[in-house]
Image (cartoon, rainbow, N blue to C red; front, side, top):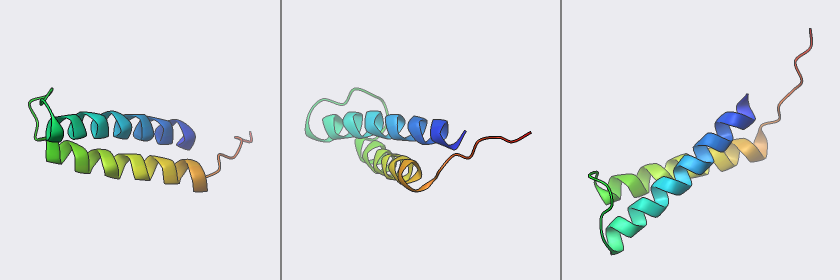
Length: 62
């Protein structure tokens, strides 16, 4: 479960970072502020990568 959340955060952070950087240096593709997208994308990306790196899923024992 943690691995799935970490993957979602990482991929979402990458998308937000790309859209934010494109908005800052080029054309803005979304209606949101490009700086906000870049900051949130960085936070989500770093949290997702750190969760993938340091958290280990344990098998569910029944």
